[in-house]
Image (cartoon, rainbow, N blue to C red; front, side, top):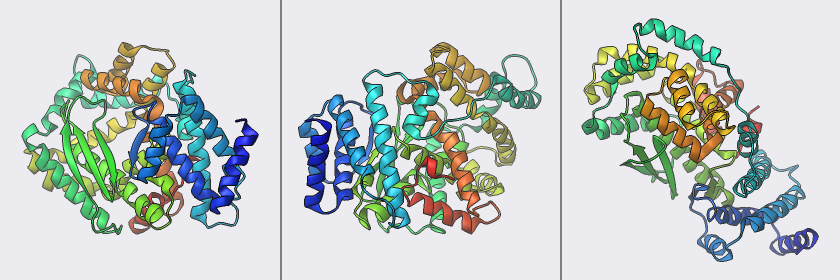
Length: 425
């Protein structure tokens, strides 16, 4: 079937059902699910109609079939007027355009096309991260050198100091539950969630990531925490907020409530991981930590609650977070290592060494991070660039740190919408 005939067939189908966007969204979901047969990581979540999933499984589309179908669907979508609709409907139209473009790029990658790190992130996530030279990170490392004087690599001195802040394995669950309860309480002060929302936590090993939210639909999530490496006290709030409240869990709950349940937009029942949606998901999840625990609020909560729960010295909480504030300024070093590795400027061993030197990662953590690069490639930009883009967007709309109520309002509005990276202006 040539392109014209295919387009006419789709158009005829649309005329029969009366709502072209409904049919476009259904076909989009079917194609995302079809991609899952070729890419095990592609479909991050699905809780939509069972018959669409059955159709995708039965069709057994090849990558060529998917690529042609995505092109035809994008052409059809471009012919459906978006003007005159309400804001969410206009955002929906733009969302599908960007998601389809990313799917097309992922098809080409699976067929062997190689993109540079920046080309890939632009094609998949609708954004390009800034690049920094070693001198940018060295300025931060020089400040840390003064904080941890001595001989030997700085990362070893930093690690030796940091060991006093590891959560004992037997206290992990207690500490995480306390962190989750606090993050949920902070979120519920500002965001109304469905009464039956909830998630469960599992502790796993053998993963390239430190935590993961698997959204199940029905306002429920499964959150997994990887215990391969030592877990430091800051990860309790980070993971509880990022994976749970007000991060991934809340993001998915609000999309399901406001877009799927209230509006019937089934395209939001599926989450293709390698797509612009991920920058919003990861960016809001990371920025949500600051929203829930701004400024000194976090240090005070950790000092009075989490440090004692972990059996750590509460008097050192402020000291710990003063150092972490410096180390956080090295976050883009991870992007730079991934960029050089994906672009084949350095190999896996060199990438791990670069992370040890410029990101202050322990050897084991650096090796794990390179495994993440192998599996997820340019996805790394979604965490730090996503956070920065979300922060700028929220603050440009009045959600500044000195206006916490407005900050929460704008944050919830973003979580509840299909706005994507190029719309964060």
